[in-house]
Amino acid sequence: MAFKLWASSTANALRISYNGTRTPLLALSISRCFSSVIDGFKYTPSHEWVKHEGSVATIGITDHAQDHLGEVVFVDLPEPGACFAKGGSFGAVESVKATSDINCPISGEVVEVNTNLCENPALINKSPYEDGWMIKVKPGDPSELDSLMGSKDYTKFCEEEDAAH
Image (cartoon, rainbow, N blue to C red; front, side, top):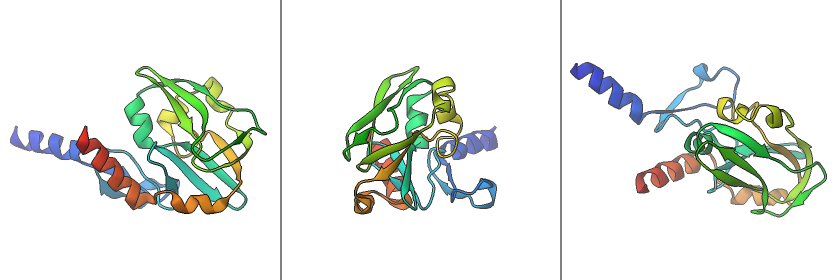
């Protein structure tokens, strides 16, 4: 009985993060709350992530955010060609718990939208960093990425935020 209780409390205290490969079991690191964070991505205090590759930045909400939202049932996303300022709302996510705005971590023009989310918004819960991405943006000012958090800072931010609640 004591072992089962210990195992349960230990499991609740851990969170899995990985480096973005499709084989996360090979590159696990341990942190709290079971939310994953990917090295090389950038993060905002409002729980959006950015993956910058070449001239395009892919944006979505973090595993931490989707975990707190619960089951995502609807996503409102912009049309390609729309332009957003850093910090401006580009859409919304509706879950069984709440509706939340999604903020653009960097300024830029939307060049692609993940239309799969319209038919299957639960992809955000199942795969927030891969299949659940939301928009791709041509950055207006790539230097804005420098003001965002890296994976270690974001993990610390989430731990502090969770501890405060």
